[in-house]
Image 1 (cartoon, protein in one colour):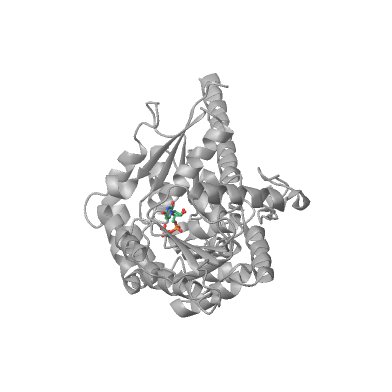
Image 2 (cartoon, helix red, strand yellow):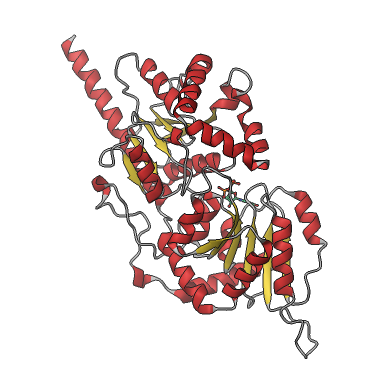
Length: 451
Ligand code: UDP
């Protein structure tokens, strides 16, 4: 009936910013699709319910390892071996079963009972939560729906994939294949829409061709699908002008945005410095001494205050107008105001850039799950990777000075974009919750009748 409230527990941990961002995006999508009908309980189950170290210290541990990527590389690879997978499951089951059970049994939203459905947006929230749910459903069979939404893009750890889930939402062909290799059924379990990302990126104009692998969903119409010829470039360029005005940027300069993930990592200072100086030197040879810049560079330093201070005091030369920002909450506006992006290979940033049609110069990736984001971008034809600041500067300069290259990369980015993914996933999840409740109430009615 219409007043039914559905509660969803979203399990995650704040290892990197992406898991919570995706969880929030899914919550927002429920609100848009079914206002007032869904309540989400988003929980960092490791930090809040991990019984002791290391289980409750994953967030700091991840941050530390991300700083020294070789340590993360070792950890990731060991975790993918049969022994690593077994050890992880053994330790979790031994030490976290009871506290995690308490978490999953907690009253959800404004109700006094546990959630109607459980969603994992984290690689370490499949195996044990599935066992616990079966136990909570007090039978040999799990009745509470459980789905995984993978928040990585071109690569992902094996622990994301458990053949016991009802659905596993994957964002890319590479992860679709990996899910299959872990025993998930491509017809009944794997659904490929895209990465769930923030609301600000949902409705951006796109000419993305909607393609999905799941045969069961093949005929579904994407929420924001638009025929290709509906795209009106003039509309997007005038909104770009408005955005530039709002953000205090120059109107007519080719503009490059530099982002180092939420933490401003991955060498954002040397890269911005090399790129800024390259672009800044461009009109040095000009005979006229009017110091008009030819390019614009925006650097978003995220929470890296030191990088912001260093770049603010740097001299780049007269050829470039430089704008340095700290953490911004309107990334959709900064991206839509720019012409290309230089970034660490974070899944969220790449998916967002693709929706905005930005060619991407990737400058760093975390070994393991972010490694696959490089071929994801390169094979789709909307970017390149280099770890060398000079090569990055030269490449970006060559892009910005070739309108044809920019245009074809923009098209490739838009083609790879999946701006309707978040709503598509939430819509499917809502359907799962609805049908589970119907099944449950039918079962209850039958039981009453039998009695
Ligand atoms: N971001 C933001 N403001 C900033 C810097 C980054 O909102 O100042 C967002 C960015 O748009 C993206 C996320 O932070 O959604 C970074 O996610 P990603 O997966 O790219 O990398 P992570 O930081 O999680 O490694």
